[in-house]
Amino acid sequence: MRADKQPLVSIVTPAYNEEKYIRGCIESVMSQTYENWEYSIINNCSTDLTLEIAKEYCVRDERVRVYDNEDFVSGVQNHNIALSKASPKSKYCKVVGADDWIYADCLARMVEAAEANPTAGIVGAFWIYSELDTDMRVPAPVGGGPGTTLVPGRDMCRLFLMGGPYQFGSPTSLLYRSDLVRDCPNFFDDGVEYADLAACLEVLDRCDFAFVPQILTFTRTRRESLYGKAKARGEQYYRTLGCLKRYGSKYLSNDEIEARTTQSLSAYYEFLGSCFYDRRGREFWDFHRKNMQELAGEFRRPRLMSNAAVYAIEVMGRRLRKAISGSG
View 1 (tube, rainbow, N blue to C red):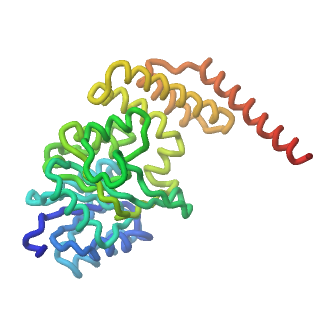
View 2: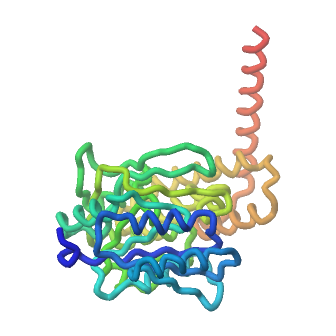
View 3: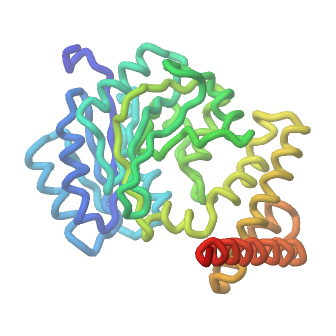
């Protein structure tokens, strides 16, 4: 398809102190086989060479623009600022993390899937991610069976809320329909730790999820990143409870919500019990105490201690079996 016939895609990259990675990110965008795109890079008061590197590419391609925030904002807020720079003429929006990259056919394949499925509000694909500075690479699962290219949005959300696999990847691995983004100035909710997931759960009750069965993006995860920090303090446990409380009534029956909340709360206390002996510090425990009070109405210390005791017994049991096995 000729560039002048292609729907416009607004690509955005929020960036803060990414001099080590941002060149690769930008060049992956500029290497797309799809031609009708514009690219906005939003520098969040970086103290390294991020801004200078980004500005180099404005000279090389007029489709690249760089914005510099006057004041430092949170990572989620900077994502929303980035989306606000999308052209009002764009049909699709694509976030690319400053330390991530997209493969050459990413836009072409995602736009093709979106155009073939007009009811789709979000397009995903298999993705590769590096798991906290290791070389681990895992493709994302998706709702439906092999060969599935379109899944009802509600089915995707139900699958996740009912304990299925995490299907939504990261913002880098998704393509959003621009009208959905424009309808919500704060597309990513700064009030929750899982803002990218919340955005999907917010819109998929009124649109579908298209899927490209091809690896199209690379997401880098690091300990100092928002994702890394969230995972270190058990994001998946409070995220599940938070989503059930916030979105359960939208996608599940009352009985399903109750059953899943009970399961999720048990898993949360098991996680906290396993952390009891790790000297996590006051900030860690204050964070989870606050979460429990908000999501479950109370933080039950006796239940925490019970789970901690069970965990200790299990650890001692494993060590004893290992010692016996070794001595044999």
